[in-house]
Image (cartoon, rainbow, N blue to C red; front, side, top):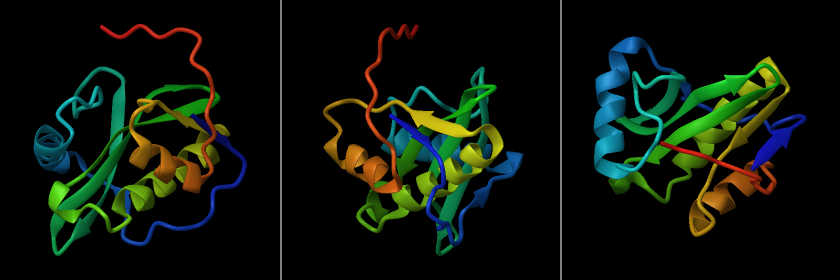
Amino acid sequence: MSLSGQVPASGEGVAWLDGGAAGEVAELLAADAPHSYAVPGAAGVGRWAGVRVDGVLAAVAAEAWPAPSVGLVAGVATRASLRGRGLAGLVCRWVSRELVAARGRAALMVDDGNAAAIRVYERIGYRRRRVLAAYVT
């Protein structure tokens, strides 16, 4: 999916996380998104953004594997006990806005069967694009 142009403003409470949060991000991903390709410290995975609820890291997304004219949103995850509150959308919208401002376009990959995630991304403004080829090791 890709996004260009203006992203609606939103993102209260979302911020880029400092390096000290890597353990918290890794714990959230291990528990609630164990198949994420983006993990703290992986090659090409840059900074992480997140939002906290009552001091607990509730949802995250990363900037990963960027190109000069497109930033890639990856590693989107919400703590299972806090799902259904719009937190993934909040973090993704904020990161997407940051990437579009910096690079002109943002993109992400999502499994066709993940209808809930697709709805979140489409509400932000992402549109489906065909993948011509992808190779992941």
